[in-house]
Amino acid sequence: MILITGVGLPFELPRAYPGLIASRVNHEQAKLAAIASRIGTCERRWIAVVTGANKGIGLEICRQLLEKGIMVVLTARDEARGKAAVSKLQDGGAKDVVFHQLDVADPVSIASLKTFIHCQFQKLDILVNNAGVSGIELDVEALSGFNNNKETHLESFVPVMIQQYEKAKECININFYGTKRMCKAFIPLLRLSQSPRIVNLTSIYGKLQVIPSETIKTELRDADNLTEGRLDNIISSFLNDFRTNNVLKDTWPTDLSAYKVSKVAVAAYTRILARKHEEMCINCVHPGYVITDITWNTGKLTVEEGAKGPVMLALLPDGGPSGQFYFQTTLSSFE
Ligand SMILES: NC(=O)c1ccc[n+]([C@@H]2O[C@H](COP(=O)([O-])OP(=O)(O)OC[C@H]3O[C@@H](n4cnc5c(N)ncnc54)[C@H](OP(=O)(O)O)[C@@H]3O)[C@@H](O)[C@H]2O)c1
Image: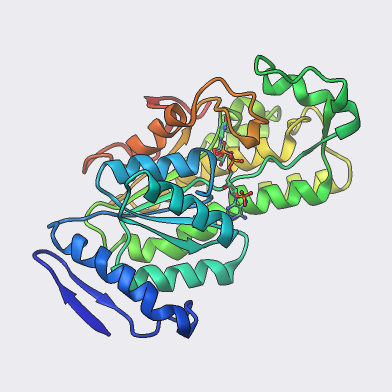
């Protein structure tokens, strides 16, 4: 290990971080050494990981965190797209940003990022679980005569949405289980921070009102007693109903079904985690209806506006709220 000591934190670099091929090690180490020396000049520098950050709200969250002086690890499942995003930020003057590949659906990829963060920073301060997919496809033929101008609301796409089991499963796996995998992997490193923060991107569609079944709603709103196991069972029963074409309108949401259920699960999981880790600020946030690919650019807000809520929650002061649902920057309810 190379030990770099600055004014503040000592900073270690491994000689051969396993995720780097040998020919790139020196180049990567030189870049990291430059970053490390800057980190060393700050008594208490925060390190953030943002998932799904090659575009949209995630990329903007990185930009705003960098503006606030945070060291950002920008992650993306596709290396080329992720590196291009880092270059974009660097072209805008950002220095303290590095890329690491991360597919939240892939435990090996998560483990590799964890090793990287542990080796380079020894701790993590902020985890933003932003990566997400819609879980549906649009019917391209039906779409050809469809008015999808900027004024169109997402709901108006319902007639041309195609929901299939494989996409629904993928959506739950990325949006909910991806968030859960990341929390489980990184909580040990967050516990080494003096001010650990987790921000989970949910949605207005993650409110309990999207679930028609009163029984399921009652279980999910019982934050003091809901367990991870019970939440997993609820999600399994949704997927089972979806697979057997049993998504009945009095039980589950019938359009954007997997997306809505995944975001309700993210919100419920946020409460479970916050209850378990009282020393952390763990919140979920609806960023607003934002112009990005996931809304087929039908949103009303810019990414700058959409990133404000997540960034505010990432930078909460010590003793700030935890286990809450935010609507952009405003405290809201899970209902
Ligand atoms: N836009 C809105 O109005 C709105 C409203 C409510 C909530 N949200 C939530 O905000 C978050 C960001 O969405 P956005 O609007 O910025 O959408 P976006 O532009 O489509 O960005 C989604 C990001 O997630 C990444 N991603 C997808 N699957 C991944 C995986 N398995 N591993 C890692 N990254 C993955 C995508 O990477 P690729 O480029 O490789 O696909 C992309 O970078 C999502 O969780 C979304 O549900 C958005």
